[in-house]
Length: 120
Length: 496
Image (cartoon, rainbow over all chains, first blue to last red):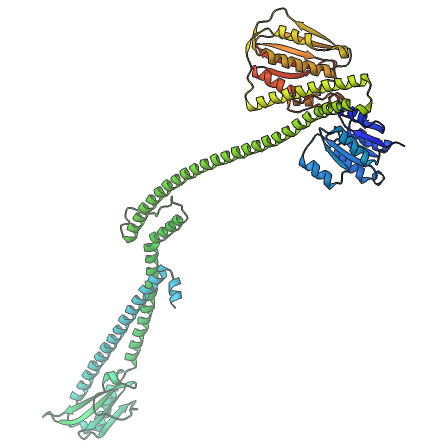
């Protein structure tokens, strides 16, 4: 069965771009933090692509919520942000985020990373 | 001893001194007087008793000295005199012939006793009895009692002691009253000095014109000194007050300056924070469309994806839209930078506002949502001094916002109206409207209303900030009102 990916990103174009390039995976998306958090429980993704600047709940809050629940233990998280703040990068290292991408991204490398994380 | 002395008041000391001296003088005087009285009385007694003894001795002849019955009779006569206690007669050989009276005499001395050395209660006077040829034919001893004299002396001593006591009492009272009187001004002076010590310079030592003694002089001088001191003190106080006022003012200035500086510091910090925020937002906002552009371009170039022609066209459209967004972002950021650095200069020329509005409406694309734009205006407007490009930018911005928030197939109305001193242009939509709490905030930098539409169609968050700045640069103002029953109404007024 194909791996499931949840994209939590408020930019419609970016979501579309990711969907096109990640063809072959089962993909769901959410535009807000709240919607994304809801879909994690419902959709049970194997990997979450998470933007940090989101309307409502922020990306970091969602990340911490995911890590707080043992049933979400297996979910891989890729952070995709336009922010190039040093703190975010450091925080990602400190919290053991699976991958951290700063926009603009090289879409090929990004797809490669997703595949690696999902062992495809 | 010295400590007790030092604790005594001045008055007590003087009283003690005067009393000691006067009491000593009175005592000595009274003692001398008592001695004198003693001498006088004794001398008088000696003289009187001598005379009596002389009379007795003269009244006895040589024949009578051996006549005992005569002597007995004569003795009786003599002893009738109360002042004579006893009498004894002797022959020429000092042999007792006859004795009468309370003769209880110890040893007989054939000489007159010294009155000052009498050691018992009797004073013996000795007289020789002379014959015709002045030869000694016998002798007598007459004994006088000294009791009455001693009594007189005792009385005198008693009177003396009474006088002494009275004198002492009088001296003490007079000295006390006198000192109290004399020292009164000194007490007032003391009170005045204490008051002065408490900085009560209004206090004066009371003096009358008669007080010309030393204390009066001191009091007068003291009052002069107090007045001098008072005026000096007042002057000093004034000077200090002035100095303190100066200091206070300087302090106030300093405080104000500190406040200004801390405010400035705060502003600088705020500015610095905003700058950092600005850079962060700008980089974020620039990167987002850039990610789409690069991402879709790469996707288009990825032959493995086998994209259909339609999809490719969609992607090209995305790239085009995102490129335009990027361009708009960059021009907005540049405008904002110019505004913030104060180098945003409008090119003011005479222009017709109605023509500008019509041109903007003509070129705006409203087809996708089926929206129609209606312009309501009078026929003629005076030419206005304005920067045509910038006012066009304002209108485009307001209209694109209105389009973004308008429902499908709705109407956007633009009303141009002339007032006494200004022309007002309203852009009215039938969208979701703006809540009262956000009517002013929408003009703030990077402020975005939280709604589904603003999430989907991201602006720069700078459009209205730039609009407001341009309007204000023209001396005008801009505000938001509600459109009844729904929608918002952006109104800007430009002075004629």
